[in-house]
Length: 89
Picture (cartoon, helix red, strand yellow):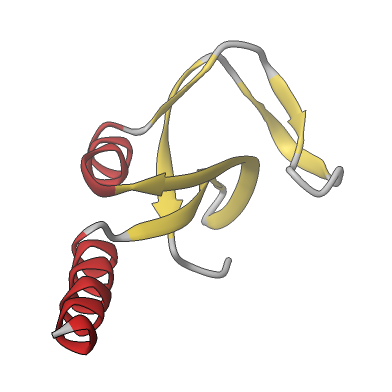
């Protein structure tokens, strides 16, 4: 009986983790036909992941550099930018 309880507990843990999809996200901008990664936003899961992908991210300062510290071809001004999650760019 103890083995059955442990088995069911393990299945419950794996099931909960599978339902709560998580991904690393970053803010991005398309400038002159090229995509630039602006900021690392961290990991989002579940409803928060769906929300940030759908609604984008608000930039509050003018950005002159990418997330890697390279110069942008033109500044990105405050406003809403798109968010990419779980992708390599």
